[in-house]
Image (cartoon, rainbow, N blue to C red; front, side, top):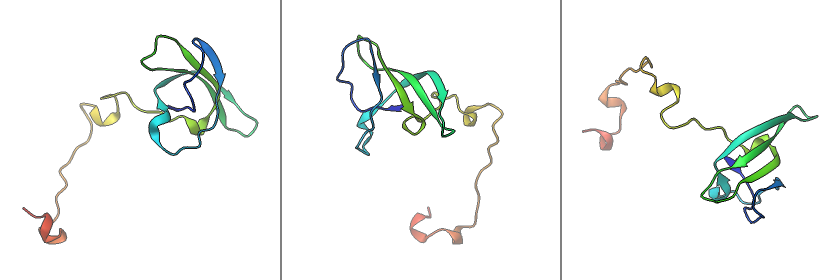
Length: 102
């Protein structure tokens, strides 16, 4: 997902990323990384294609590393492997508060 400032733009254009002043998630958009470039500060900036329910393509460039969060596709993380280690968590009842007990 990419934290993008505004989707008010012309169709099929490249727009340089702008910082977002809000801490709210309404600006998070699914995106695909198209290119990654190393900066002078040993960080990365990305060119991304934004995904949404739009008829046009939207692209942003110079998106900083901190504006992108990499997320596993549904049911594709290691916890869903058939051979993933699972063990029941068992501990004495006296370690739990009385309100939590059955």
